[in-house]
Length: 496
Ligand SMILES: NC(=O)C1=CN([C@@H]2O[C@H](COP(=O)(O)OP(=O)(O)OC[C@H]3O[C@@H](n4cnc5c(N)ncnc54)[C@H](O)[C@@H]3O)[C@@H](O)[C@H]2O)C=CC1
Ligand code: BAL
Image 1 (cartoon, protein in one colour):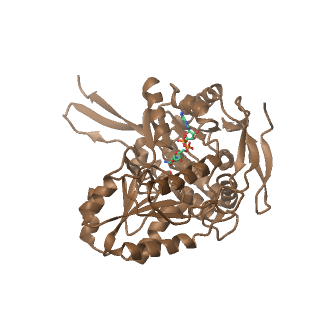
Image 2 (cartoon, rainbow, N blue to C red; image 1 turned 45 degrees about the vertical axis):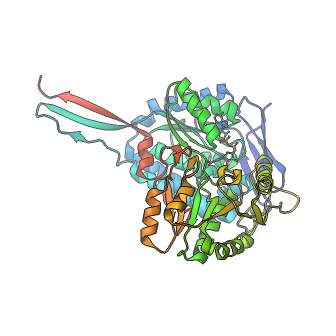
Image 3 (cartoon, rainbow, N blue to C red; image 1 turned 90 degrees about the horizontal axis):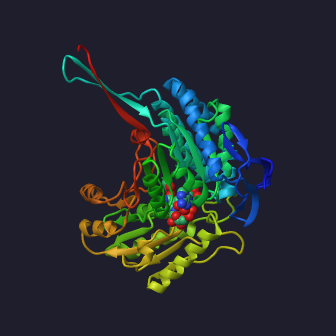
């Protein structure tokens, strides 16, 4: 079944928006051959609109468009010009920041103020940051012998495939598009079937900025159809993936059984926040609460496990609970809302199930744990105490506004051992007023990012990516640029 591309939708604030619902290939919106997908507003549980989905054939078309664009046009564009286009794109996102934020709010349930001032603002900065790198990519001459001239070249990979989740639709796109395009690659991105709308608005800005047709292609569809076809495509040179560890394994398998494409996997987490007895407890409680409740807990680096020294546990838990109680849960279109609904019924059900599991396991449900209202997927910020590392609550990624708090009685070594006792290693937090404890604990933590006396503090120039089963490869910073390049050595004999 097909439907025309542009649909009119109305936000909860009464604003009418036109949205694209077809696949974006070669700078045009084209129908997909898969089934139409109902896109649900998680605040109201109503259908916002239906979007087209891509079949394997559509994936082939998108990859072919990217391949042709890369070979015939994009690889011949001067690096500085790539930077100009990325900066233009950032300017257009800034112009349309409010509309992009509204699309994230209706589709994902994010508070519109958070989407605008954090997500989209972060994306704009990301495109500008990588625009600056576009003409600063170079190899070097390696002096080996007078009769030889040897140099390295940092070359684009060709067609990059990207699969992104629903928790940060535009930002997870930016973290991949910006370095991939700065490095000179063409991209086919699959958005989550749950949150396709903001990416299609972004697609119109790609065209308006002047990117040649085929350099950026955006499609949506189900993971087992569209995602798996992209991950297995023989013309895709690299796959950048953000999502669950289980799906990350499938993407890796697809690479292994297809063309051994290069991979970058940004996966799940169960990040620990360590609160030492000498910490500024009020500050620690405020930071740690934001560390779990930001984005409704739907955060790969959510600080979902807290270990607090037993001597200050009661005081810290009281301060933390005050923070949880103060979280404004409600309609994403109200300017003071901090937490909207969870993204989908499946996620809502999964989180509520974990809240039950926590109680069955013997943890204390200290605060929250209930649905908010009777419509939409809203959940109270929830605090469990008396938790230990044997509990599923402490070991499994819940991806919701649920924190599990346990205690330790010894020094930093014990706290770090508890934090490191996890299959994951994405991030960690350390709260202490002692510089030596901060450095020793940070160095010993098996995590890709460690925040000291803060949490969730991102900067476009600072790399982010996990240890252990949280994945590999870095996003952001110069490290991310290198993920989208390959190095060639050219060895020449001057006289022969
Ligand atoms: N680390 C992170 O940022 C994220 C972690 N998650 C975790 O995963 C849980 C489940 O959420 P889901 O949306 O189901 O995550 P998911 O990992 O299944 O989905 C992420 C993306 O992968 C695609 N996908 C699914 N199956 C695929 C396959 N076989 N081949 C290629 N692509 C595929 C999806 O369509 C989506 O675009 C969450 O509760 C959370 O624990 C989910 C989203 C983001
Ligand atoms: N916190 C940004 C990365 C993510 O949740 O996927």
